[in-house]
Length: 295
Length: 278
Image 1 (tube, one colour):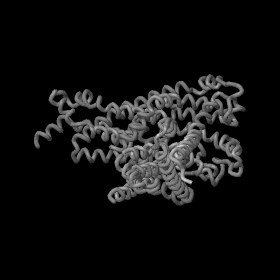
Image 2 (tube, chains in turn cyan, red):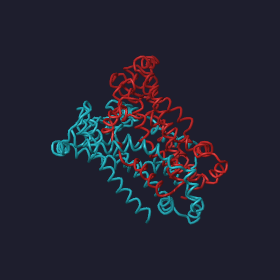
Image 3 (cartoon, chains in turn green, brown):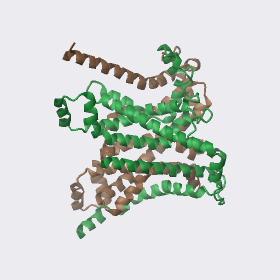
Image 4 (cartoon, helix red, strand yellow):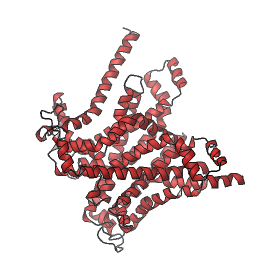
């Protein structure tokens, strides 16, 4: 026992942990904590000194900009839930389809996964061009005889948010697909064979046999994309920038705009609310997921 | 009427082909449009149609190279992405090794502490103040260290998953050999982690190359901007010349495109291996 302990100390020294802990603490945890402190001050980018001003930033946030702020939070959640369901569902369909054996399926998998590798800035600008009123997408709709459907996808107050969510799904479905495919491939072959002999139809086969095996991956995809949706910024910023009007203003773009004045105290208040909100949501989802896994 | 086996097979083959074509269209078309538009002149590229250019504007690339400050942004991106990759892999692999092998209370606490960073959003507003206080605001090191801190959680998760399946006997061989822990780690463990290292190299480099938000908020010095920020800025300057913007975007994704084409099967399998095991 003693010897084992000594071996551990010698060969797996604790100082191996230190560099990661220092970098993570100083540049990740400290900013979060510092944010909470700054939110009670009149700190700004330009000066080094700051005064504590109590709850003034929060009062300004909730009283003066209350509606805009809560609307932005609401939209961020709506966006997160939408893309989470969309990415997971589309990813699941892709995974089921590309699990069928045929020539070239590996190329299709690679193609579907590809957009994640590219900068959201490039994707955002490119889709800005494609989804313009006289852009490629509407031209395609016109040639298909669907001119009723054409509209200004990113410039229409009622549609812009859904268009950006659509682009986000196009980008992210590949990730869900890869995760679910891995789960599908881990289903033991004899389980599938037995169902074949039993003569189970494709739907029964999916819900009764495959789904239990891939539920874990589906949960993971939902969780990860909800969290990434709650942080979503780049794509919105480079496509609509929160517009038209405030129709695609999310918590993240609201925060970005608040920085333009040079003040840091007020944005820090927004940032702290965001931090607490996302952490709470993540913890709740984590709880639910654990309960599901136990069942 | 009962369908024969061969008819069924035939129909399913046609269906598969149709679905494949639809997917191909939806996913390849935007990329093809980017490619085509990069060699069109201003008026032709404005329509963004799927046709060959009447006038091949290779001049777009020359213009972009002249006007876009693109070479500088390219080099900045390479420097930042490479540094993030090297530092994050080194510190994450080291700590994941000790965490997995010790597997005691301390290491479990450290693991949970680091992993928490995957959930909580990064607070870039106070990070501005922090970097100012450390005198790192507007410097390469500031942005690199911030990006490392953001990526450490997921990288530790990945490495832990991989190290768990490396048999302990391997370390013991090195222990008998009498080499110190650092040498043991680099000579024995690191080589067996090659798949994990390569996957992380790709993921981290891509992250560093593509990062936009941190550069936007934490890098006031435009001489130190990387590709995404310079593309975004260029698009603001040449709003109506889609051809030139597309040429610029194409140059900005070339390194990633090459890496992806060479390693895609690897990325996809590595991605799932880490997430499933971890």
